[in-house]
Image (cartoon, rainbow, N blue to C red; front, side):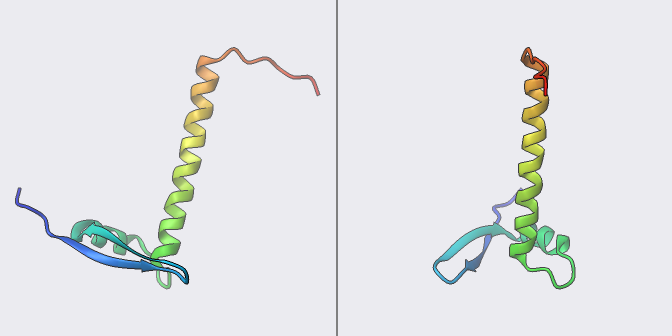
Length: 74
């Protein structure tokens, strides 16, 4: 496999300007995941939210499997 040349894209908001290095293949995959009218920021925000939820579920399952839990009467 040859050396990949990264594509550089600018991500900015009112306060900052950041450069994120992204391989062309990754950029193409991200572009393909966008829905019509969706910004890259919206796409990435959704991906972050799904990852947070996945990690929470994973943590809950791990705790349920490894800890002795007691029921708290209401």
